[in-house]
Length: 233
Ligand code: SF4
Image 1 (cartoon, rainbow, N blue to C red):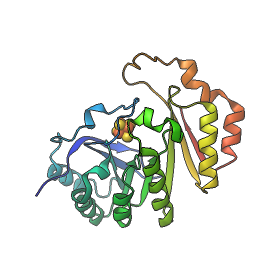
Image 2: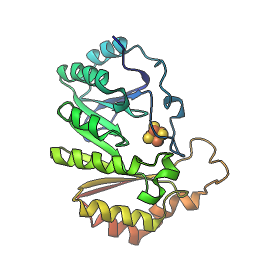
Image 3: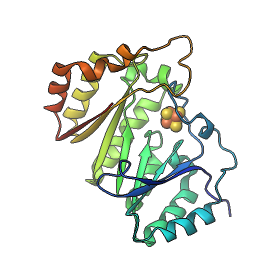
């Protein structure tokens, strides 16, 4: 049987699943090519570096020490049913299951809703800027469908917006906040863009990256629209 492909593992984190001690597995493969991707080594499907069975044994050894296992990537859902089988086994050990997703696979997310307790969903830009940022024309529409799927479950989630000034303006951020507010999303996170590699021709400055976080009026306005807004600077 084919195994899931794991390209990275963070053994302990307090920030990747709300209010739970967790570990994060980074799965290989992603249908998007975001300009700011910090995990380019995970984008192409190929042999994962970690033996899934050894990782599973390690997860077993974390019973009583960790509360949740988060599947991230890449885009974990890209691995489809073999991922679901793996998650099922991890769930049976008693862990909560988190998923960090770009929302590209709403149908797979719908298939997996009973296996997942919480998601962090990327809302990367306005509809207009999505193709430039992600290299995919249908990424925005798919992400909105995924949002619909998850909201239909009534389960907890967070929508994440990474503010890369090459692809998002303050007025775009307000537009996105407004869309999410109208959809009755409760929790969002606004994340600072940190260049992990060269920005290429369009180098960004600290001032450009900080503009979303230094604007008190913008912060106050957005904070008033949601139950929880985390500003990850
Ligand atoms: S969705 Fe995430 S992993 Fe995929 S290219 Fe974009 S930033 Fe990288």
